[in-house]
Length: 248
Image 1 (cartoon, rainbow, N blue to C red):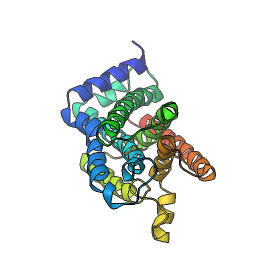
Image 2 (cartoon, rainbow, N blue to C red):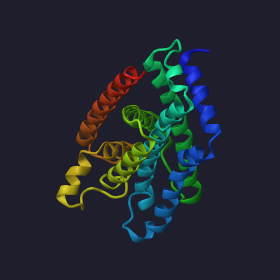
Image 3 (cartoon, one colour):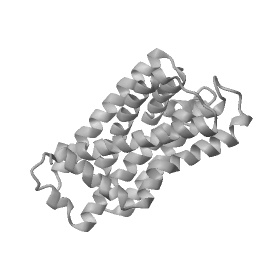
Image 4 (spheres, rainbow, N blue to C red):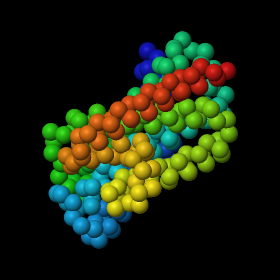
């Protein structure tokens, strides 16, 4: 069994033995879709093809990628507590393969979660998506979870205390979530908050996913957002690998 496959199998076993992980990875984002899709949809002006639910669908997918990556990075602390982390670093695999194996499993989980979200959106909210955009949506989901996974892996490897890491992830989750285009368009926001949101990688991801689900978005803005997220993901990968090499 190759290093990447071994890491994927190991991550799957960790998830299979922790119901909480599975719930937050797969089903927790669906609560956002139901609560906001049903509860707020009637209170806002209709967006193209299904009201606020259609607009918010991309936000749910972006939040799911964000959440999957942050919860997966917590496994570094689990490995430290079990005393296996340093042992794994002596195995015949590159440090980058160690991270990439975890990443591939995260991408697989993100695909399953996206399929559940799209099925619920179609079945319960009556949303209809253009099937020709699904390959693009899959690519964007993979890219999105990649950036967040490397970011939170770097943070987890730099922080030694579990409680500090949980505080960082919880605070960053709410700050990035509300200072973004996940829940609302940026146009009506105060100028200072709009500026913050435009510099937020979660906004960039939500805008891509909104293009893949709705076909909306200015090409120029989507272009610089794509370039920004590529730099963000690349820098996160570099820091994560460097942090892993400094372990032990």
